[in-house]
Amino acid sequence: MEPITIPSLQVENIAPGTRVLLRASLNVPLEGGAVSNTFRLRESLETIESLAHTGARVVVCAHIGRAKTESLLPVWDAMKKESDLPIYFATDVCGSDATKKAATLKNGEVLLLENVRQEAGEETNDPVFAKKLASFGDVYVNDAFPDSHRAHASVVGVPALLPHFMGPNFAREYVALERARTPESPSLAIVGGAKLETKEPLLRTLLSLYDSVFVGGALANEFYKAQGYEVGKSLISGKETSAGALLKSGKVQVPEDVVVQTTLGKKEVRDASEVLADDIIYDIGPRSLETLKKTIAEARFILWNGPMGNFEAGYDEGTFSVAKFVAESSATSVVGGGDTVAAIERLGNAKDYTHVSSAGGAMLDFIGNGTIAGVEALK
Ligand code: ADP
Ligand code: MG
Image (cartoon, rainbow, N blue to C red; front, side):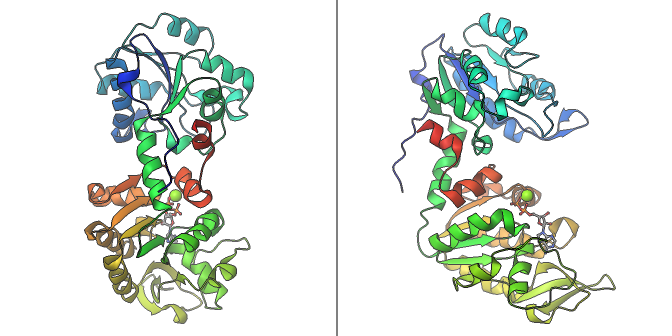
């Protein structure tokens, strides 16, 4: 493992009265204007609470949703319900309300700033905006690994201006994903899901770092196509992919059989080379699962990203079986990806993996490229 060159937050070294600017990951799911799942929020609150309990004045900066107009107000409501801390909300990011409330914050109190992406300077990493944001803290803590693949002001601009540390949630992701780049042999990477274009850097890296790379899900369709197999009406990327070039590594393993939906809407198992023109490949087949089960049982390190099939539509045998095999294995296991984690949450066995990453795209980028902008900014 590479030596960790990023300073970790040690709350006992934070003197009472210290103003801490915390970049938190608060992009939690909302339903009907309220937070629908508080699990991720609890993780952020643990960091906030530990800082507040040492007497720090905590200014929390985060984003929510895709639209810049979205508000963190529902997250504030949920935070107040989940915590006994005095938590205030600023209706702007660094305007008059935030400035006034930050200035009157007392030891042990928390101020949540409005969605940082409401400020245009966030995404452009505008130095003037970064300076304003930095003025709220004596130190900066980044606890938002899932948001740290973006070179935004709150991720890279502010740490250039303040003493900086990684928070505990950031550190957990960083350590686990570093480990996934230096896997013990025999190592196995299982990659599924869709959109090979977005997973190419990841796959390329995994082919160089892992002993075996198993490709399932809609990604496998690209490899079937590159081999000249019929894929019928299955999901494939409209774009040119490098599937052919990746196959040349000789390491890519694709499922030998698949579950298809026929024109009659029935589920059938077929050899991967015998898919019909009207079939839709929706899952990996039982023989592939048997083979994969053995490889999983022999592995000492397993990385898994991407569902094996269209599990949301009932083609879930492949995904749920892989989830169970990996959970039951004695290997170190790192599992991640938005939809993969959703599948694991349905099974409810998250605690049976060494690490379940909540970093989504940041995880793919970190493993694929070896680093992300927010990690570099803390070094
Ligand atoms: P993650 O978010 O875990 O990285 P992706 O975003 O790459 O995963 O892909 C997940 C999506 O891919 C899921 O919605 C799943 O239904 C879909 N998928 C996987 N295999 C297939 C398939 N054979 N046909 C259609 N969709 C598939
Ligand atoms: Mg996804």
